Length: 285
Ligand code: NAD
Image (cartoon, rainbow, N blue to C red):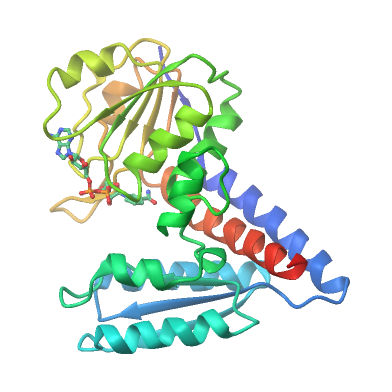
């Protein structure tokens, strides 16, 4: 079997286009465009690329956007005070603090300082709690983007066995909550999981968010399964690869996401979708 490719780039372009049209309509009706402020602390090279991507995408869909570049020795108090200021600014619908932060700043304290209705990353305990209780508001971007991709396959998720490898707060856990809400039976695997290979062999849906290149081997994949590769790993030769051994997995899966061009573009497009959602909430408040 040769898998069908779940083209994240194309689905993300569609999503961006739909956001752009909604923004045009909003503005034509006399409202201001949605506004996103991204905060970057320090000079992490990967973060700089991600932030640039987010800025460019904001421009493409007609958002107002600002980048706040802070030096690596910014204190936690200074960062919290900037968030307080942005929480109070009416034209700012979304605040995104690019992670990771320098070691002297506590990420949880910073995440909790953002107003939940401006938390377009969906990481605030309030938004995670709402997702847990099946009353989602702003949902974490990467797992939400994966759900948009899964919808495109037309595969009925109800009752399916889903295995999520990775239990991070930003990907694995919210991914499991999303799939549970879609009425899958979920198994969350992590570094202490026993018989992981056996669990993957029984999965109708596999989501890999491990951070280890080609961790999931093709022969583990059940024939006809859907394989979602969240991993982004840079190899020594400079190329990118995912957490799934793509070539061998594609021989077993029905659907598979490539890396690059799979989940990555969906994360950015979903951030735009969340910022638009926040703007609509603020407009109606
Ligand atoms: P993380 O390091 O926080 O979490 C990794 C998880 O993998 C942990 O829960 C750990 O228990 C588990 N793990 C590690 N080794 C394992 C093993 N041998 N067996 C089973 N589980 C194991 O990482 P993260 O932030 O969740 O990111 C995971 C990957 O996804 C990374 O490659 C990251 O770059 C990528 N990522 C991609 C996007 C995107 O937009 N595509 C977004 C976020 C993260």
